[in-house]
Length: 202
Image (cartoon, rainbow, N blue to C red; front, top):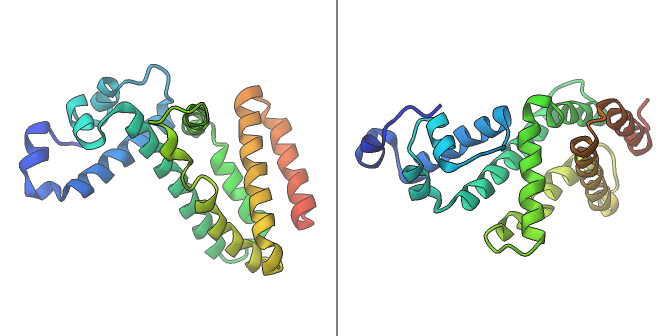
């Protein structure tokens, strides 16, 4: 929770720059959405949960829609950071890295985060201009770390980008499957089959 009141957040130099404060608020909002989901989420309720007024959220983000986009972008960035950290852990095969990332993405405590991702993407694809920015980097931001992982796993650089895109599409498809069906066992089994085909993992 962000512990500061409105009177201090604008004028107290100890709170850091506007950019720092904005980052703090987004991080707190991501944690709240991950833990509590997005049902009946309003700026007023979210602000109360993370320790600021809804006016401060409007000050920093302009609207609920823009804040939701920032939550999605931050969640995606955290996932890419996790992938990078896992790749550096000794003794983990590429398939093991993928499994560990999958376990994190499908943690039931983070279901609200994934649900928000698909909801905002759906709004953007329906042409809602306020949601359109979430499509920027939706694929391209992931390709570089995934290509690096593929090359590190021995993939030919010429085909690494195709494999990276296929892996990203598969994971997102199975995440949507899990949200739609709730069939955790079936989705986990499908992921294991994908890893077997993709990496020769057993």
